[in-house]
Amino acid sequence: MQPDEFRRHGHAIIDWIADYQANIRQYPVVPASVPGALVDALPARGPEAPESIEQILRDFEALIMPGVTHWNHPRFHSFFAISSSPPGVLAEALTAALNMQHMLWKSGPAGTELEQVTLAWLIDWMGLKPGWFGEIFDTASISTLHGIAAAREFVVPASRAQGNPVGLTVYCSQWAHTSVDKACIMLGVGLDNLRRIEADDQYRLKPAALAQAIREDRAAGRIPICVVPTVGTTGVTSVDPVAEVVRVAREENLWVHVDAAYGGAAAVVPEFRHYLDGVDGADSMVVNPHKWLFTPVDLSCFYTRRPDVVRRAFSLVPDYLKYEEDPRLVNLMDYGLPLGRRFRSLKLWFAMRYYGHEGFVRMIRNHVAWAHRLAELIVADERFELAAPVTMGLVCFRLKSSDEETRAIVQGINDSGFAFLSQTTVDGKFTIRWAIGTFGCTWDDIDAVWQRVLTLVP
Ligand code: PLP
Image (spheres, rainbow, N blue to C red):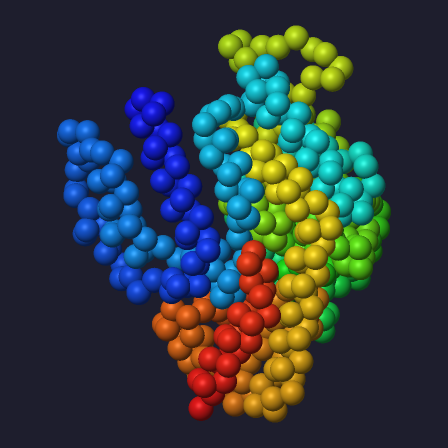
């Protein structure tokens, strides 16, 4: 592709994206696609002869777009709204163009250092103390895998060479994300050795129950290694008492990895900083800008106060990657599983600079205010009840009448394509999860979905 052709198509694609962003409300949030539709529509074998960008774009419109769920849609209220902002989209194009991989400082000096700078800015915006070492992975699941791997290195350093001793044990609450379970599978801890500790009536891990479980496990000859408290649980956005969890873990010499994948973002707003109380005492933490900081997926920040331990767990330098030591030199390949790394910090840097701290505060503050306003509408209608307190941008509610009738509301909304809601189970009852946080969402969008919900009440 010659530069002129690239320029022509590039301009056309930017025009397309600008129109898409401007007209996003015209799309159904959830497509009326059926499983296998795209597979059947595309040839079984890749093309032998070259095709033009015009042809490819025609098929993009005709075949791909009908199968797109619009995560950026202002009425996408299903999962934690992983929505991108225009500056983030522009930065993604530059990242692809540069195609730099910074496993070594030398292979990507700007990638290595911008990662340090943007992640330190974010620590400051969240009101945490300086001194965290930050690096970027793709998802919170991978960040948490690294947190628990570091815990194993911290408590049982011999495991790196010899494998796991029997009885490694990890703790989290009943409400922790399944990424903790998956990390235990991956690390050979085993699901049977993940203790899901009882939560209180606000869905927060009970520190006394945690302390007792650790004591009992030790007495039984097991090896507790890690506690994973959550700030903003997926189901109900409850916030575990991190400071107390840290106190228990310190007495027992355990590593604390905080899952603030969603809730960490709330702390950029000064009045929500208290959600991270106690986190400065933890050993590692995950915060996902691709959840609520308007950065295109994927970007997950893994932070640790003990980079020495993470490095001990992961560093392995083959001949072809050997480097000279230098006090300021960071080679990120030493601090984790992946060797190659995308230049992800660029999109975070673009978004942080374009909106500034005050822009992020305004957007997140609005989302939380709208969540409370929606909760007020729910409480005012005696047919409904809130299923959990609103802490951040998530509202959990249900019909008082029955699970079936509540389920029918979610199905009716999602089948219509007008909006996208999700569901969970709280106190054994079917519950609607309504997550507010999409870039571009307004109160009018939320109100419009609420009016639709009302039409579906039997
Ligand atoms: N932790 C929490 C609290 C989450 O809500 C989620 C996903 O929603 C995850 C972890 C997993 O995130 P990821 O998709 O980045 O692995």
